[in-house]
Image 1 (tube, rainbow, N blue to C red):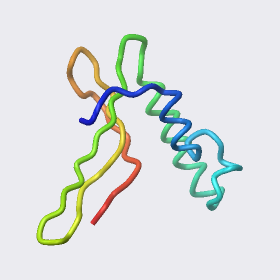
Image 2 (cartoon, rainbow, N blue to C red):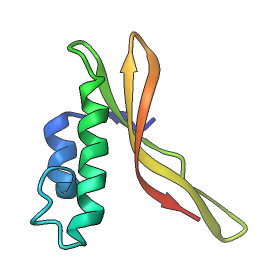
Image 3 (cartoon, helix red, strand yellow):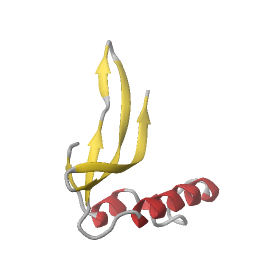
Image 4 (cartoon, rainbow, N blue to C red):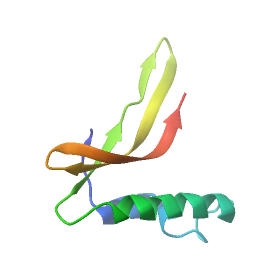
Length: 87
């Protein structure tokens, strides 16, 4: 995990999660992702924390891993949302 992050910062960096029309991609694809994001947030009661994570590593010149956000409750990751997959 790379650090705690606010909902506002996530949605500013990843506009496609909340602004389908301004995403620049296929509206059909982005609406599915935005729906998954809303479902992820619905499982986030007050007191939970959002943390960024990045498992991307480079071995033998090849990068692989995932990047996204984890929902942390009482110090335990209870869910995650992946925004990028490398490899």
